[in-house]
Length: 483
Image 1 (spheres, rainbow, N blue to C red):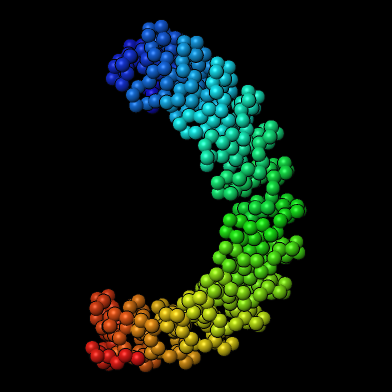
Image 2 (image 1 turned 90 degrees about the horizontal axis):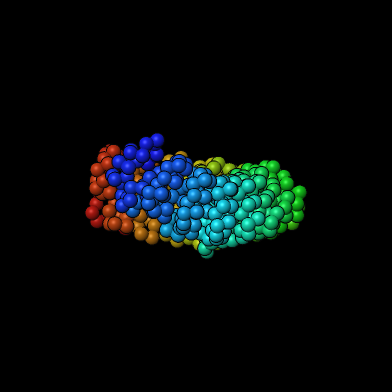
């Protein structure tokens, strides 16, 4: 930071010699320009200060500092004494410095003396961009009057002034820009429009202005809903929205509403013609989304409208599998899907069934419901795992239920692991005890050639489990029988 001036030249001169200035009067000029001391600035110039000088570390010259801090008379003095208006070595040009701080008179003065209105400094932002971003509407109006390009994009990947104003919530600036032809439907390199950008930033007033001025609303509805901008949502619902519009993830409005469990909105969108079975980029439908959050009402609405209950996502999961792929206890959703024809033992691409997913997440109620409807408890996925194996990694109640319902304790996965080995490796003491009590074979060797007891011996932290093996009188054998 440049040293603040005081009333005595002697102190400034003393400090100048300590700074990185070859000319002490240039240092005096820099301090005077920053702090608005016109007389000192004039005196420094008379004594030989370089009007374009700076120290070797701080590339802020007198004209930049005076423009940035709103010192009009010093700006005029510097210009009259040959200051470089296009100071390309600074991060901000003098005109940009004035514009970003709303110093309209100085900005106009610089333009009058030859500053190029659309030129950019080191930050690649024009005066109009900076004035718009910082909400200086009077400066924006002056720049436009002087010929600033309202749709100027300095370099690829940057954004026009309107998008910056929208993101920051400067409604008056946005209106000014729109009135003179700013592209209201511009999309940035992430494919977000000006309206979507305003909504993502929570700038409701700007969003309302953009809608009023005719901005395309297709993608904006999703952002309004995600950001809970209810006022904007209500406005959009009364307009002709494209219910088939998708965001970059391939999601439609109906999918998003289903994911949030917003049943009233879902009904509204379906009535407007939304495709019930449309899929996103991952092959997920609205019914799958509703099932995954356990929203019975949403599931009922979609089924009533003939949504396909056995449709599959890209990874092969059905709505029933989605309902089982969380720790939410949504037995009523499972019941509803099965009631309308969901295949109980259907597999995904990895060979997993709904029962395996429910077992994995420890949803005992779901597991019980699936078994009631005929789920095969000893079904195996491509890796050879059963529901019991998935549950054995930490879901005690589910393990107990599966065993009571007849799950095979000693089925081996493709790599040789059993439920007991998995529970031991995961150090699930209670589950190990349950499995041993029910007759799990502790002699079977797993993928690394070790039995469950040997694994307990290897892991020091599993001494409680090892003690259990001893108490249960399990026999360790290095030549364990392979099943």
